[in-house]
Length: 97
Image 1 (cartoon, helix red, strand yellow):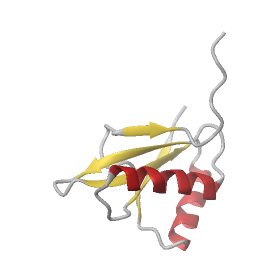
Image 2 (cartoon, one colour):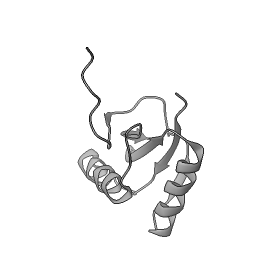
Image 3 (cartoon, rainbow, N blue to C red):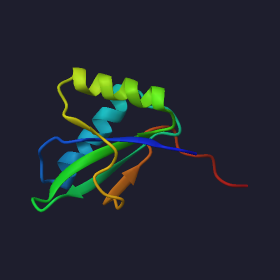
């Protein structure tokens, strides 16, 4: 499945603060199954930034618009291919049988 992603730059260095923001955003946006979020260490300043990935381009546009309307600085894509932490905001996947 293709994922469409964006990154929020909250201007923090603390991973815990970025993780907390990621959980708040997921709850506010009521993201469904198929969406997930990650926290990244970014650049030489070691900022911590959450990213969100969603399963469709229309949903990505909606999420980006809602985050921008709330005053968040949003960039397309993820800052790097390696995340420090990841979580799925939607319900947990069913166990394999």
